[in-house]
Length: 188
Image (cartoon, rainbow, N blue to C red; front, side, top):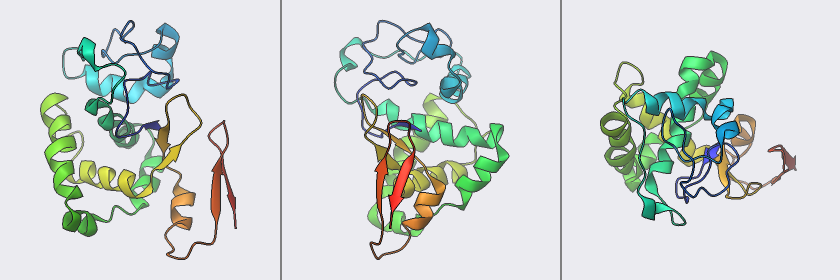
């Protein structure tokens, strides 16, 4: 679960629009308050951003319009599973990234030029933590398998491994509906 690739600055826990008045003291990401900062949902991007040595500083004119740095948050949360949950990491790695198709349509090169560059150069996360292939695979998995959840103040995206497997058929035979508590109802 995390922000969509194109989103306005928002709290990374409750997903309400952020105004920059409160930021996480450890990593600098805009948040609502200290309660949201302490929520475990914020752990991945907080730890990985803080490890760069100085907190993120967002310009004051970036609020209320899409800001590109948010695209990396869901990628970081997905990569962080490698360090925190072997079972979830294994499940994520089983999802299709369609690397060849992404290379043909230019998306792969865009991920190399943007997300890989942000992770390596801006966040300073070395190859020894997450390999280039792991980063690009996660970018692909999110592109192919993430679902928009219109149940928060600003829509977010999430991976549902079982739903993704259901959708790997070219024949429409099911519909999905998202509940307010992030559950998915599938009807065939």
